Length: 107
Length: 120
Image (tube, rainbow over all chains, first blue to last red; front, side, top):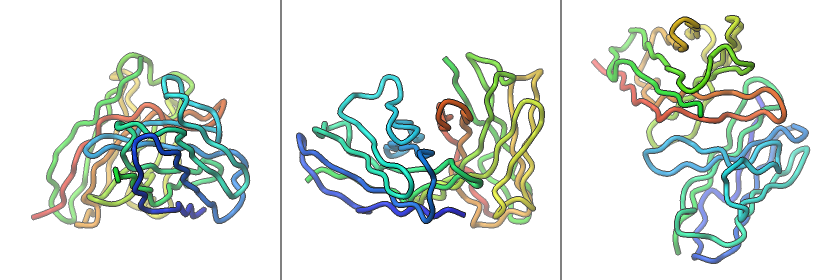
């Protein structure tokens, strides 16, 4: 299985901050990477797919980049509703796997 | 707009079989999509279980393959998950999701999830 390692696992930030989350794959996955946001008690919500394509309806402050083995999710200016856990997912090969998650909390 | 809703028993006895159904509304299960199951143990990360196409073709996570069966009922526009020989380690929130295989693969939307507890 392809392992995905997210860093950091925990991030404390303030409203208005710019934050970046990194996802590293144990082998190359081209651009077959998606990012999800999950709030407590809720299902994951798709933010980004194909590494950098913004899902319809997702605010433009979210952006993704990368290819191969290193990917980033950037939130340009944190809003109160952005405090959640973020997961990356690789869909290059079976089985699809997820990173361990990055918990983003209010400083 | 496609919506998914999981249903099934919230409590399963150890060594029993977990059975869940995902009802698809707002679209046809026979569209050109796959349909997946994902689970999340309490306080932990996400694990893909498997997927099915409306033709009945399936792919399973090798870590669960010996215990998993996913099936589709086109007449009811739903698909189902069976996980046999369950233990406490199978306690999790189980999600179903539409699994796009084209124009950039991704899971969207997801059902709200259903908690299944394995306990006697």
